[in-house]
Amino acid sequence: MHPPPEPSETHASKGIGRRRLKIRFVVRIAILTCAIIFFAFAIRRAALELGKSEVPLDWNSILWSQIGLSVIAGMLAMVPAWIGWHAILRDFGHRVHWSASLYAYFLGHLGKYIPGKAMAVMLRVGQLHRHKVPLGPAILSVFIETLTGFASGGILGAVLLQWVEVPGWLRWSALAAIPLAALPLIPHPFRGILRLVSRMRIGKGLEKLLGVIDGRLMIRTIACALLGWCLQGLALWFVLGSLRPIQSDLLSGYSGGFIWLVCTASMSLGGLAGFLSMLPGGAFARELASIGVLLSIVPEPIALIATVIVRLTSIAAEILMIVGSKSISASVDSASIQ
Image (cartoon, rainbow, N blue to C red; front, side, top):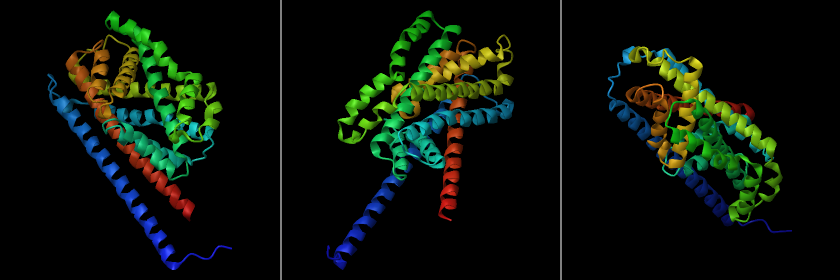
């Protein structure tokens, strides 16, 4: 039998444990503070862009009910991706409670406003670590969900662009890019990447996940992503509807379905451009791509206003989902303790 630890050793180990907890707490607070600061910068930037518009925006003329519906659509648009990600975690054998993955997913949205976007992964993975999910599978699940989401959005936007009046070179370029965007959606390339990652220290224990990444997992994740992009298009559709008092009959020649199609292409291609730009929140790149598609149905000032307002409604939707998911997670944790 081993002798009991000396009191001094026990006291020292407890002291080290407390210091580690304090360090982790400070790091988390620092990360969240940085995320919130850059989040505020994104809102300020959107407001400045709105002020540059050549069309004076009379806030009293906006249909605020449509703005509210845009926020709701933006909130719903994020849910399918979370469902797909939660399912990936279960496929990997980690039974994380849905309330925990819900908060981890939406908290991660704060991280995309920090340059490099690595913080989005860190925030999500950090929350999963609290629920005993190993680092490797957690990062891999985020990688699959994120890359699949933007690749699906790029393909969806490229297909929809064929019905939109844009320059021919843009239409054909989008079509030519589809095979490249489709590569991350095929299970075999994912397994190849996983083999490389499994050889690294961070990928320890990932070999057993090779067989999990199959067609069923990818099809389910792609379906969730496509549904999310369609709802994102609906959010922009509501914003255009809210601006009708200042744009008169500009959209009267188009059906509601066609306007939604253009809005979906605008949001999906804008989202892909923002992701590839690696700028905080996809600044400028996202707006430029979105405006370029919207110009097919509205003039540039209206396209700018609509793009900036939908960015603001998206931010509002993210804030509401973060707060709501945190409340749900705290309630579930409290109930489980009792």
